[in-house]
Image 1 (cartoon, rainbow, N blue to C red):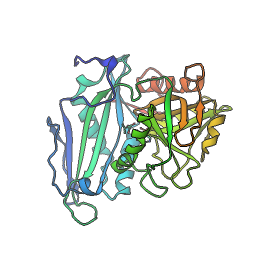
Image 2 (cartoon, rainbow, N blue to C red):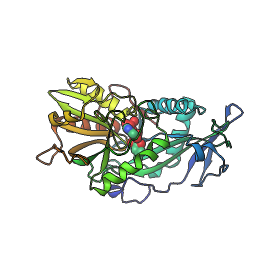
Image 3 (cartoon, rainbow, N blue to C red):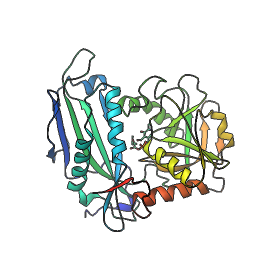
Length: 338
Ligand code: PLP
Ligand code: COI
């Protein structure tokens, strides 16, 4: 086991020992290669560099009290990477190859999987991009698939404590019929101005509204939004948000707990009516929100008035994390011990 300050790890890059790579050429994927270099050598005219032909995934490996390492719903990440590949015309990575690469990258860096009870985990970053040279705007003929890992702590410095979010209206992350449902780099490039604006105003993350009418809640930075009221879990339905695997899982857990679930457009003024609101994602896990400020109108919505996360958010968080770390029964078959 590496000697790191596991309890105080930020959400950032830590060098590990190995990464794995493979190449798509002449219509076929190569076998996996193991590398100890943090660098990749690609053509300067690669489509990823010029036209943003790139997609990635984000998942985690969790070490349980029993010392075993678990993946959470890896097949959903494999499927989403295929969806992203289709969205920007890249060669999809077969599911078996995705699994083999992820397991290999984790096992080769097993000493970096944080110990149980530290709140940290091993973040897994699969990356697919056009590596072939093109100058005209067209898809590459060659692709590279890389998986690297890095141990991480909480995405928001607050951990499981209320965060502050800012509604940003002067930039959009994704267009209604654009690339929002794909996990492609361009969406994150488009979000950087909003992220910076929120941070400068003292907020952890931007909240984006729908790009067309600016009436409905879309997403929160790199996480989905949910609100809870009257025993109902409500989360936006939109053509420009990324389908979150965490959100999909929480929806199931909410139903298991007897909550009603609604997936529908959520008007921004409805924020007034929620008892609890939060952000969810692999990195964010479940982050309760204490304040949302509309930076343009100055309107402030306040939650968690006692400074603590709400009861339902807490139960959802404990159940989700309990399953991920192997503490609670995995009723839905979400966990793979590797
Ligand atoms: N929305 C965006 C824009 C994201 O980047 C992420 C992170 O992956 C999510 C939502 C949450 O998705 P997931 O729960 O699958 O990690
Ligand atoms: C994730 O939750 O995996 C994300 O994608 C967050 C990341 C963009 C930092």
